Image: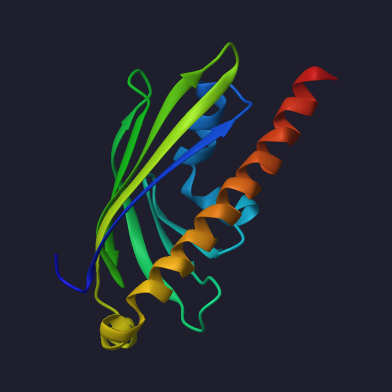
Length: 155
């Protein structure tokens, strides 16, 4: 695998039902509301947004996410990524227990941003740790965001 290619997989669980969780994840424009590192999400189409992300390291990644699959029945959301990241990202939204959801996030990308490409040889472990921090904060943010839906439903 090239120094500029990355493959990530994260598994999250949330207490909300799959349809509700699927709707939030399908809404690219809502990501900054719950994912701190997604600083901007500008809708550029019905199924596409331009995202600007920044974690602990001092650089932004800007890319477009174009949903190519939104299959509610199978719980699959998949997007093509174009820009500072080139590749795909997907969510599998699966039932977990009676009312919860298990999320499997996969991302296979090549970094095209020149600064990050130059750093890859010496900083690859740091770049991966930066991604893990972003995912940990995303999981926490999604759980908090969805808890609001759950509280509203239960009141």
